[in-house]
Length: 392
Figure (cartoon, rainbow, N blue to C red):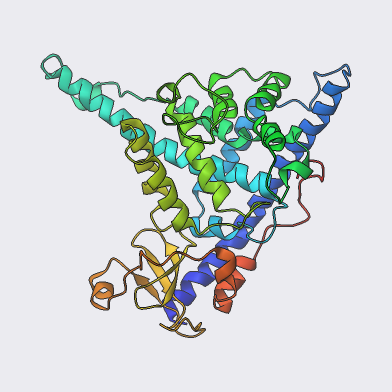
């Protein structure tokens, strides 16, 4: 293994060990929240008194919890965040998915908000340039589509978007065979009916959180299939809810699910882009923000070059990759190197991603990874911190 690759992965491993301590703490707090909600649902169904109990969500407390989580996520390398995904079991699915949607949704929202706000500011300045010609730029108040306090609340909604699933039996959520029409109808209740009940039970009446919990599976373009529940019109669905749906799809597809394996992140980005591209200007800006934040080749993806070699993406920008096989697909433990595929040298060597070669799933490629990359992925969160059997 080259020195650069060795130093990179040793540094990643050290950072991951520090990150996992914070991750386990966040997981514990989330699991406690889910457990409290489960007890609250039982109490409510049995019409017990004393519903003003600590089992209800304290929004201010949750915002503090969210800030702690977001600080943890935003200061962590995306390669580490990808490496904690469990490709082999679904025991942690609710937490990993909720965390993934919160992270992806929040960073896409922030970029979208910045870009959209800049467009509005530029339009207003152009419209009133004669009136404002004597004003300095720092004298004029900036327009923000979503102010900072709204962004925090929206991020909380992303974290809580799937809490309606607590009311659905685990046997149904984890069903491996195809869902019947009756099963599907019950699962879909987690957004509209059960999601709304979760909000009411906790006294949460914030419109941002309500829209996210209820409509994160709603159609975001006209006649989109497999969408629910009905909303007035996709064009009226707020952008932050559309962002949640995109983040939800990305997170779900890149995790192992009861009915399917995790999909290569690069393939997921391409799938989402193809589905939503060219629909309307707002959705186009959301997609642009999504691709800019996640990357066309997200960290942790495993891809094939036109010369037949397999590469492991360590940085989506470039992308920067470690080449870990020879052209015949044989794994090399000693010749790993970090290469920027956008560099002139890489292009001269014909190190180009094969767009026609379908990316392999993480499970398919794991055994082909060299030992040092396997070790990095096998460093996992504390398994003793887990959701209760009733809500896993």
